[in-house]
Length: 433
Image (tube, rainbow, N blue to C red; front, side, top):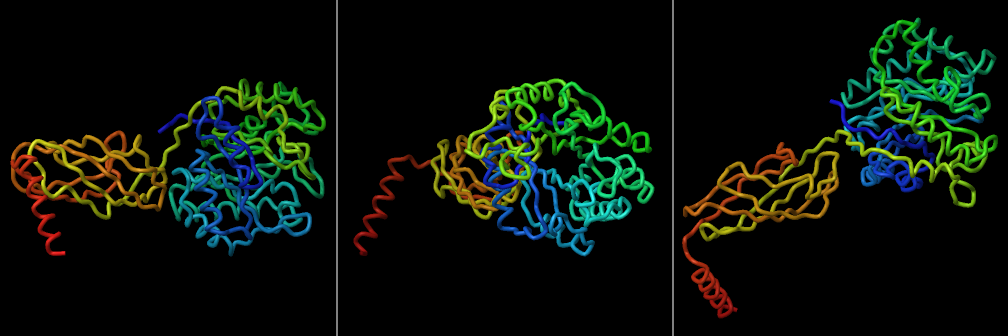
């Protein structure tokens, strides 16, 4: 089911930049923008990245995770098939921010430096296909994406033309795209990252369209949602004020294509070599004008699907209730889903129409955490012992937890009699002490 989507995003190198990323992509009425981040093989630390995901959840940022092997000098090692299961165990151990788990396998393999010094489309296709199959077996929520390619790379000892690379990939694994869920594009404005925003075709900010057309010519007829995870102009070749206008043009006239899910320019904060010319942040801590320019650009509030679930561990209701009056109760529940529970989205409900939940309150409850929910309800005027079940639901009324019984006695004794009864009980205990 299609949901409102905020295509604005940014590529980061460090989780310390998440707050500034959120201030960029969720500005001007925007919400739930995207962030592309890289996880290296040596960084598979559950606690660290669960904290990263938890922070992204609070900031309403959707993660696009690109997995990487190990750096070796000025190149990246060829990924080891034996590590696939370790990757899946790590990725599957995390409580993801939204239901779709966007995972990119490797980076620009048509560069020899990205694949252990070799150009091997057959090996990459085989690795990608195997990894994608295993991710889907682990969870249907994994949204598997291929590496982005350098569309401007020429034939050389160090690089391979993207068309040749893709053709050889599909010859090696003809059904490859059966196991992929979308397309990643590095739609850079070339040559020299200084091309015009109005240029079209290969090697421009419209590279994604050329790539999809080429894939169709190879027999790939699948509708592929597009993720532009790298793009951007060189701030050393083009005036930064002009870059701001170029980005505005791109988002308004090119990247408004309905096939595009996210655009995450490279890179938010990397003012030193080798990415100085791409950084949105300067070495003095200030930002280039295109940061504020995109902040001001109108956006929409995305509403990505999240798993909403929980478990009620215990609940109590007021044991003695005057018929026709309100009673209080408490629920202890664990959030087992992905969303942060709040009183706008989570409600206390009863399975009987004669119990009216009048109010409830609780602090925000994050995934895996326990929450104490206090509620007030009204019961019918008839007396006797009552047994009712309560549960939590979302704002549409759909149950998100199990039901839990509460019991009590509905009495026609008036308040004065009850107060007198409790005064006598208190006095009795005081004498006993």
